[in-house]
Image (cartoon, rainbow, N blue to C red; front, side):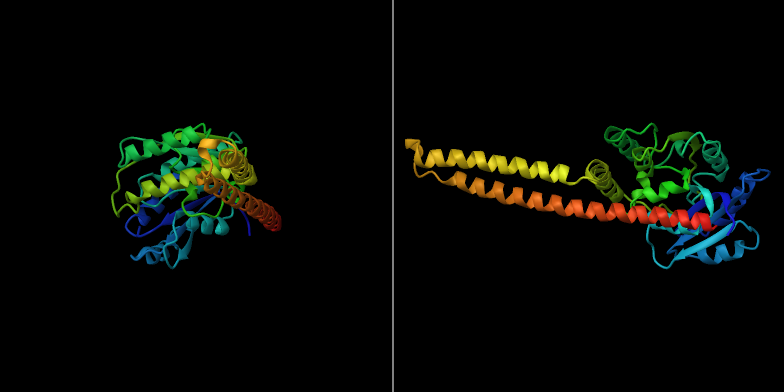
Length: 313
């Protein structure tokens, strides 16, 4: 299986009306370029004619590859499916809704092909829906993580090996930049124009705000304590044990020594709570350590298998 320079991964959910123009614009974007490329469209459980439209487009565009999920699994799973089917050294996440025009793809991949960056994200330009939500999300992300870009939730180009660093979690494709930067990859951005939708409907509602916030905290915890969970749970357990010990000493003094409080017992309940909860934290920390070791070994195995696959190609 021969490789290509760039693999464009395109999750598509009910995008039959947009795909013909999208493919036409991709072909125009790379026309005359020496960069070899392919476009992998992942039909993510569409209920319209997306799969049939892709079949009709295959003879016209030899660089087109199609993949399919029978049921909707989300963008993160679609990108993972595209990653396994891709042959490119550089991967590009690009939605099929034409809010981002394919003309920007060569500008996204250029710094990576030139060796100037490992990952490039688009910095949205122009007016768009949910700008306030996106602004708050990016502000929170910059507060929690040290990332040198303005926009985390946009189109992206990245080296293939970065996908090996992203946990297999729903919606965590939004945090690829954060995870890549934490792993030591260089990150940059280029401006991209965002256009209004011409067909189809947005797949994201207001519930994504809550989900996104919880995911943000989850990623922060993963990067901060994911490899050493005992650093958090062990410290909390030790502090609770210490609080229980001190409270126990005070309770004994109040029970047997200090005359006005003889017979005062409520603090004993606090001792029990501190010791029990502290024990739970310690046990959770040790279990987390064992899970972290197993996950590290699994990641090393994935990297080794990916390296063997590339060498065999």
